[in-house]
Amino acid sequence: MDPVAATLIILALAIVAFVSNRVPLGVVAIGVSLALFFTGVLTLPEALAGFSDPTVLFIAALFVVSESLDASGVTAWAGQKVIGRAGTRRLPLLVLICLLVAATSALISINGAVAALLPLVVVVASRAGIPTSQLLMPLAFAASAGSLLLLTGTPVNVIVSEIAAENGGRAFGYFEFALVGVPLVIVTVAFMALFGKPLLPVRNGDRMPLDLVRHARLLRQQYSLSLDTGVIMGPRNGVSEVVIPPRSPLIGTTVYCGMAAPDGDLVILAARRGDEELKGQEITIQAGDVLLMQGTWDDLARHAAGSGVLVVDSPARLRRSVPLGRGAKRSLAVLAGMIVLLATGIVPPVVAGLLAAMALILTRAVTPTQAYRSISWTTIVLIAGMIPLSTAFIQTGTADLVADGLLSMLGARGPHVALAALCVLTVVLGQLISNTATVLIVAPIAVSVAASLDLSVQPFMMALTVAAAASFLTPIATPVNLMVMEPGGYRFGDYWKLGLPLAVIFLLFAVFYVPLVWPF
Image (cartoon, one colour):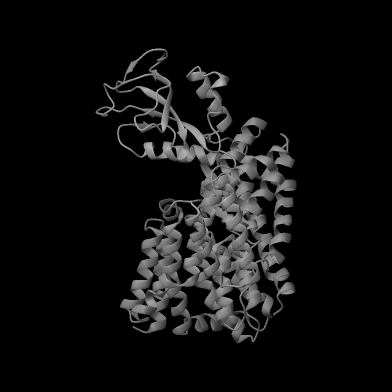
C-alpha cells in the first residue's frame, strides 16, 4: 500500500475510534503505532520510538511533582488562603477562583489543579449560597487558559516546543508562554466575570465533596468526643472510621476505648454498634461494629490497606484536605529547584523533571508506589503512541500533501488565513478527541505550511497551543470538563453557551495576537 494512503487511512480510523469513545485511548494509540509498522510505513524502532521520547518522560515526571503538591496539602492550603479572603460574594469569589486555578494549572497541570481545587470550590459555594454551576465551569475554563502561562502547564506546550526545535525553529522558554498566557487569562476571567452569569445554568450537583471542618465536627458529634480530645485531623495525625466486616479476624476480640492497637501505632478513640455508642466498657467486637481509630496518616493508610476492616473514608483522601501536611516544605523546595532549572536552561527539560521526581522520592515527599500511581498512564501511552503518526506524516510526505492542498484551496490570501484554517481545524478536532492527539496530528501540517510559505515555525506552533486550549464546547473535550460536570449539575448542552464565545476569543488571539509576538 502506498505510504501516504496508509497514513491517511490510519489517521481516519484513529479519529473514528477516538470520537466513538468505545475504544480506550491507550488502545487506539498503540493500535496506531502497530498499524504504521504492519503497513510498512515505519520500521519497528520508529513505530515504538514514542515510548522513549524525552517529551514523554518529562510529562511523566510532572505528574509526580503534581502529586507531591496535592498530597502534601500545598494546593489545599493555597486555596483556603486565597478563597478565604474573597468573602461570600459571587464576583470576587469567581475572579479569585479563576486566577488561583490558572496559576496552579501552570505549575501542576490542568487536571491536577482542577482535581485539587474542585472540592474546595464546591464547599465554598455551599457556604456562600451560590449554585455550584456558577463557579465550576469557570474553574475548568480558567484552568485551560492558565495552562498557557508556563511550559509545564500542559503536555501540548512541551510537544509544540520540541516540534519547533526539530523543524528549523527553537524551543520555547519556560516563561515564554506567559506572553500570550497572561493577556489571555485576563481576558478569559474578565469575560466570565462580566458576561458569564446569564450563560451558565443555575443548578447544584448531586454529590458534595468532603468538607474537612464539617467532617471533624460530625465525628465529634457522632462519637460524643469532647474538645479536649485534641485536634483529630492535623498535618501529622488524623482519624479514620473502620467497619468490621463479616469473617474479619477481629471478630470476638475484646477492646476498649483508649486502647492502643496490638502494634501500638493506632489508638481506638471511640466505637459504635448501630445507633449505640460503646463507651466506658469492654467491647467484644462483632461484625458491623464501627471503630474510630487515631494515629499518624501513614499508619492509618497502612492499616486501611490491611485485611479485617473496611475503611469508611480513605485516609489518603482525608489527608489531601489537610493544609500543609507532611512533605509540603520538601515539595515546595523541589518545585522551586525544578523551575530554576527549567527557566535557566542549565539542563534539558526532561532532566529537570526527572531530577525533581527523584528528589521527591528520595526525600520521602512521595513514596515510590505513590509516584507510580500518580502518573496518568493513559496520557503517557496516548502521547507515546501518537508521536509515530506525526513522524509518519513527515517521512511519507503526507504533511506536505495536505499542506499543499490547504494552500491551493486558500489561494494567495496571506499567512493569517492559513494560520486561521489550521487553528479552526485544531479547535474543531479538539472538541472531539484529545487536544494532545489533535496537536500531534495538525502540527506536521502546520510545519509544512510554514515551510511552503517560507515563514517561521514559531507563530504556527504557539498558535496551535492556544487553539488546542480552547476545548470548551463539549464535556468530552477535556478531562477537566468532565470533572466538573456532575458536581456542577451540568448537561451536555450547557458547555457551548459559555464555551463558544471563549473559543472565538482564543481563535482571535491565536490568529492575530500570536504573530505580533512571534512574527512570521
